[in-house]
Image (cartoon, rainbow, N blue to C red):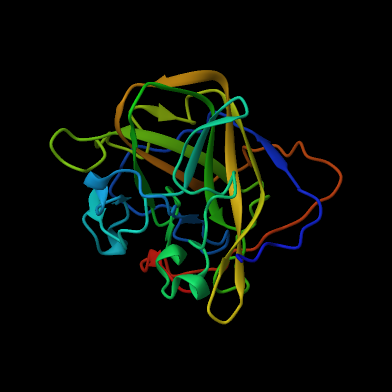
Length: 288
């Protein structure tokens, strides 16, 4: 069986989503600091459609020091078993799209290296749009018009190299973002908007509220060590309907300006999850 975390109580942290927008591409490095740790997004394991058996990930960089072309979406094919970034769309309490099975316990052995015999379910990718200026976006395809009022992405709640630069998901120095892009006609790439904001949806300009919590699901490695999977949830003030088509989804953690632009509303039990510092120029990571 997939190992679950031993948390007895679900701890939920809620933040105001204030309109602090990501800067347009400027072709220069922002921040380049390890002080706030690194935010790693988790992949999903449900294959969406046969025509997307590869090329389900694209990355975008605006930091020339990363060594990749800047301001240009680039496709990256990981193992075909990875069906884009893990994401769930809900309308009220009903799941209307997902590619991971985390919310309804249908993920099978995908996040367990021991049961899989390889590590394709253990891929994850760095996403911080204004620190080393890099994000990943994942493909998803809707077969019919889909209305939702909740978006969920998933991130590494423990990290890889716990040291003096942990990622604290509860930090008021961190601002979360979600975006959806349309697909380039005739290609499998997101539309370039000249920035890190999606052309279909962006939490930067769409009212709602972020929260994060532990899913109770772990990435399990061959040595029996684990990384807990956390969920990042954005509850929209007003539902959105997407028409049938191909889209790209991303979520990232950006460094908030001073003073911090986020306010913590949760009270009572407080817990911190730590994600280890990582060299961002090695943005794709697959081992603990």
